[in-house]
Length: 162
Ligand SMILES: NC(=O)c1ccc[n+]([C@@H]2O[C@H](COP(=O)([O-])OP(=O)(O)OC[C@H]3O[C@@H](n4cnc5c(N)ncnc54)[C@H](OP(=O)(O)O)[C@@H]3O)[C@@H](O)[C@H]2O)c1
Image (cartoon, protein in one colour):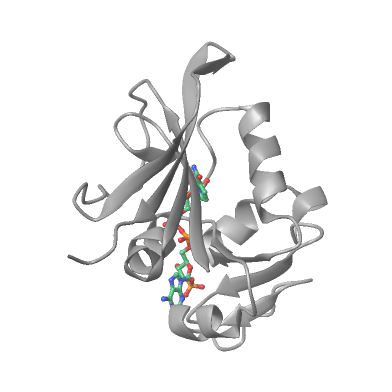
């Protein structure tokens, strides 16, 4: 199963200046619980944005995309195409960003774990709009508040073709 894990604002911002524009410990916990033991697939810029202590992300197989054939991410495996990385995943596979990687992976994903932050924020990296006719919300979590930001955990599954 290929899933996306993403946190985005009401205007779909996911990043600013190469970083997350918020600090939400509950979201980090959910991310860890969802992905631990599985394989995470990410773009080079997201890998390089991880703090030293979490690069590579521990207790997960880390796959990093780069078009540079000489790229050697420490503690992770490099892939030159999204298809090659997804094909290398043995079981639970989580695409964890960033914007370029989400956009390309969305058509191949069956599940979307979203943290929806209910304010508009400034940013320079975005998560694409999802087609409401193609996705069904199967988890609609309660509204939480941390650091003055309201957010909710939602899970979407790709709707069966009609
Ligand atoms: N809110 C969230 O949930 C979340 C999650 C993750 C990241 N982010 C944010 O997203 C931003 C980074 O996103 P981004 O779009 O700039 O970068 P990104 O997707 O993390 O990385 C882009 C790079 O990955 C490589 N790449 C991507 N797709 C590829 C493909 N199909 N084939 C070969 N290489 C490929 C390329 O590396 P080369 O240039 O080496 O060729 C490309 O420049 C940051 O602000 C980060 O904090 C937010």
